[in-house]
Image (tube, rainbow, N blue to C red; front, side, top):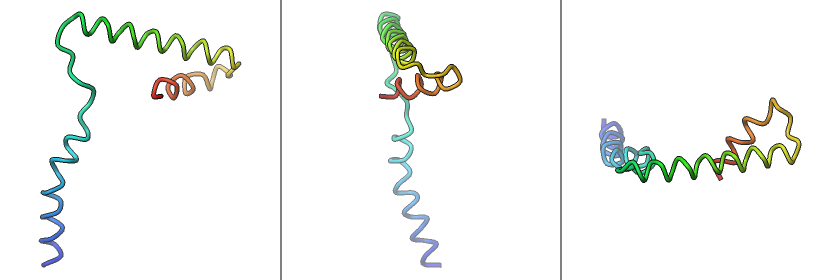
Length: 72
């Protein structure tokens, strides 16, 4: 009973931290901000695709390569 109470209390105490950690990217307010970030993402995808092609990554592995490149 005491262990259950401790686990529940710890879960309740940690909930705000976990909920905040799962929030996504900052919310973009204006259409101008959205356009800027859209351009940035498109340029990075283009760069990653060209890099994959230059490294001669096979087509079936290229999607994963680009996805990993976008994360870094």
